Amino acid sequence: MKRKVAIYARVSTEHEAQLSALDNQIQYYDSILKQQSNWILYDRYIDEGITGTSTKKRKNFIRMLEDAKEGKFDLIGTRELSRFARNTVDALQETRKLKKIGVEVYFTEDNIWTFNDEDGELKLTIMATIAQNESKKTSQRVKAGQMISFQNGVFYGTGNILGYDKVGKDLIINEEQAEIVRFIYSEYLNGKGTVSIANELTRREAKTSTGLTNWSPAYISRVLRNPFYSGTIVYRKSYIPDYLEQKPKMNYGEVEQVIVEGKHEPLVSKEDFKKVQQIMDSHSKPIKIGRRQVNGVAKNIWSKKLICECGSNFNRKVYHRNKNSTTFCYVCYNRKTHPKNRYQNSDYKLCEVKEVQEWKLQYMAEAIFRNLTQDVGNRKELYDRLMKGVKIDEHPEKKIKQRIDKLTQLVETETLKLDKLIDNYLDQTIDLTMYDIFQKKLSSRIEKYKIEINELEKKYESIEPLDVRIEKAKMSIRKLLDINYSGVDEKIIEEFIDKIIVHKDFFEWKLNFMNDTIKLKISGKSKYDCLLKEHKNNN
Image 1 (cartoon, one colour):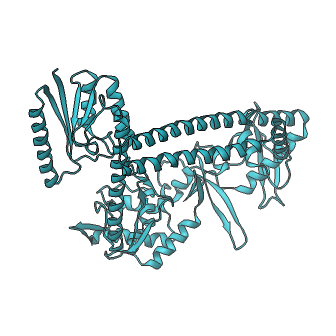
Image 2: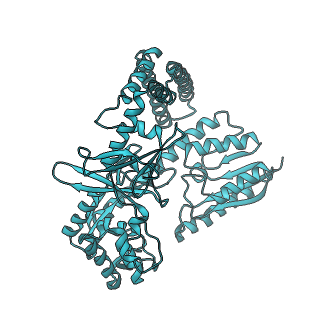
Image 3: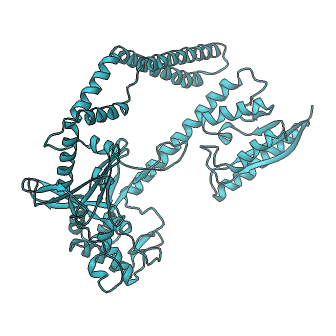
C-alpha cells in the first residue's frame, strides 16, 4: 500500500557546523526513502536555527501540521523525538491530534510507530521525558556559563547606552553623551526634578542614545537609576522562569541578582549615585504588585478623586518633613508642568489653583460624613450600599469538596498508570532506567495530590458558618461608619466620593448617592484653628 510521506528535520542553531548536520539528516532520510518502496515523498519540512523547546516558533513544523489537516500526506517520518519536540506535552498533544486525523508519526531512531505499536504512547511519553530532561540540563549548562561571564564583568546587550559606544566587546566613553549624563546627575543633586531636566535638555536639542531630541522625565529617571554609570553592572534584571517557554520576565526578587564591578570607566562617583538613589527613594514609596513590591509614587486615594477647575488631575508631593512626621499636599498637574515664569510673556492661560494640603481634605471629609451619619436615613443608605459590595461566598465548602473529588480522581488515574508501568517492566517492554524515570514522576504527582487533599480537608473542617461570616461583615461596616476625628476610612472615600473639584477659592464635593454637590470653603493653617463654612455662589 502506497503512503504519502512528509519528512521533518530541525537544527537548533544557525552555526555552520549545525547546518552541515542538517545536510547529513537529509541524506539520512533519502536513504530511508530508498529502502521503503511503498513511500512517496510529499515534502520536506525543515526548520533551521530554531530552538526545539516549544513548537510555537517553528514555522515549518506548524505548516506541516496544517498540511496534515488538509490530508496531503498520511505519514510523518522524523529521526528522533528530540528533533520533533523536547516538550512532553507538545509531543503527546501533537501526535494525538495527528492520530485523530489519520496521520501516523514514525520516529526512526527510537523505532516508535504511533499507530501500530500497542504501547507506543507509553514509550513516547518516556522518550519525551528523557528529551525534556536533556533540555533542562542544557539550560542549566547555559546558566552556569553565564555565571562565569557575570563574575568576569562581561557586558550583555547591544551597547545602546547613553554616554558609551560599543567597540567590539568593550564600552568606550562617548564624551559628548557623557557630558549629558554628568549634567543630569549634577542638576538632580542641585535640586532640579526630572521634568525640569528633561525640559532643559529638550530646549538645548541634546540627543538621546537613539538620536532623538525630545527628552522625557521617564528617560531621565532611567539614567538616574542605572548603577552602570557608577561602574556597577547588575545582571538578571529579567529572567526566564520556564526553560521550555523561553519567555523573559522582569525580576522583582524572584531570582537573586548578580552585582559586580564592570570593566568600563564610570561617569559618576558611587557617592553621588548613592545620594541620587536616596533622594529618589524619598520621593517614592513601595507599591505592592501581586507578591512583589516596587518603588514608585502610589496612586493615592485623594489623587484619584481630585480634579482641578482647569480639568487637570492632581499629583501628591511632600509638603513638609521633619524627624517625627511627614505631611503631604496635592498640586495641579497643569500648574506643575507649566510654571508661571516660563509663560509670563505669552498668551498661555495659567492655572491659578494653589496646592491643597492633605489635612484639609481629611477635615472636610470628616465634617461631611459626620453630618451625614447623624441622620438615620443617610446612615442606613450608606450601610446598605456597603453591604451590597461585600462578597460573602455562601458555599465555600462546596468548592473545596469539588476540588477534593477532582484530586481523588487524579490520584486514581495516576495509580492506574503506575500499575501499567509495573506490568510493562515485568513484561520486559521497558528497561530499568526508563521504569525508574517514569515511576518517580508518577509517584511524585500522586504524593503532591495527596498533600493537597489533606490540606483541603483541614480547611473544610475550619470553615465558619455563613451567619457568622455575615455578622462579621456587618460589624466591619458599622466600624467604618463610626466617623470620628481620627479620620475617614479610605473605603468610605473610595465608595461614596465621586469626585472633588478644586476651585480657586472653594471645594466642590460630588457624592455618588446625592444629586446635589457640597460646596465648602476652608481657611487656616491647621485643622485646630481652621474655619470651615458652606460656599455660596454670591459670596
